[in-house]
Amino acid sequence: SQELEQSPQSLIVQEGKNLTINCTSSKTLYGLYWYKQKYGEGLIFLMMLQKGGEEKSHEKITAKLDEKKQQSSLHITASQPSHAGIYLCGAPRGSGSARQLTFGSGTQLTVLP
Amino acid sequence: NAGVTQTPKFQVLKTGQSMTLQCAQDMNHNSMYWYRQDPGMGLRLIYYSASEGTTDKGEVPNGYNVSRLNKREFSLRLESAAPSQTSVYFCASSGGLDTQYFGPGTRLTVL
Image (cartoon, rainbow over all chains, first blue to last red):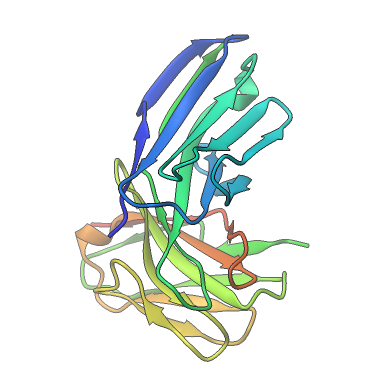
């Protein structure tokens, strides 16, 4: 079965600093989702990547899927306290008419003001 | 639109008790999912429903049953709760192969 490993598990940065979170798969990725979760809340969809080399940005968050499609990175520029939370990557597995997702264990981000 | 809603938000059960977690979506999505989230283990799929009238097992189905009541609603039932089922449960929905949208979760404690 496909496994997703996220690194680091936790990250503490000073406001204004840049940071990167990685998601590495044991198998070729046929899509990669990034979600953000605040404590006690549900998951908020950030971005989806499908093609090797694809890069997407939203506000100060950029996600990339490498050419070999086995790793994705999430980069936050000039971090703010509002960026704090748990970031999860998820990848589809299996076939069929529903998209079953396997998730990494998450990266907990703390941004100090 | 409310998106994906879940009830209850919190629940405490004693071992052996039963309960049903409710989920509803108003996005006209075909597919619905139930996940559990445990510390250090990310989210794991319990059951999913590709479309109304169908359900399939996910990664960790033991001890759970599901019902796809109609296109909007997908419930998760614990027949005899065990402490190992203490977790946060999330429902999600998608338009088939599209992005999954999650509900706010149910925090369940089994004593």
